[in-house]
Length: 304
Image (cartoon, rainbow, N blue to C red; front, side):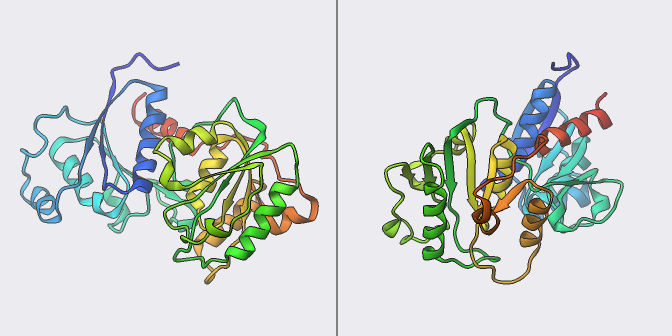
């Protein structure tokens, strides 16, 4: 039940990047499920203006807004604006990443474990980046979702290897109906030679909207994600689905690889190479909702 206390005034800075927006929206949404929230969405200031505001104490930039209780953002371009907003208007600053500026400048840093955050009083370690997915109560064990990414800084690509993995997953359970979607990084020729069969509907990313994936994750009991798409792995875990990882070639050891391996070790996800031995995905024994956990920490720490 939401508290009857006065609404929290939240200034959310967005750099326009979908991944960063997903993180900050997820935290604001989680706060809003716990108590009333009034949110203002703001663009980061240009660097020169943000520095001037910090150094000269300008107070005119956001004068028409209510003073914030919380100021939050993800993305390096938001950092100076977060600090300038606190200097001019007060409030607690929450940054949703490992910042490039010194940690002590922020009231709270929500940093994924795979970024190896240091032990510090104002650091909360998260299991992956926060997101706006909620645990679902209507997952269907006959509905599956295949989420295909693309080459990245940490992974190369292998269409043929993925086709084999996808075919094995679809063939494993004749009762399952699958939906496959791509991402903006997926190579253009991936869908040209994909044969998912009659039980797999293919929806290219160009045919999806911003709410398409949350709607799919609310009903898919089983989700497979290519290893490069780490943010979608965490979104699938948050929904409550059983999660498999489709393997693509690694360019080099990285924090992303280590993060996925840790999830597998802890029983949250199953790599295809492990699944292929027994055709069974691990089902997590507890809920996975980092946005709500962090929202509760913020409210309990500062607003009760």
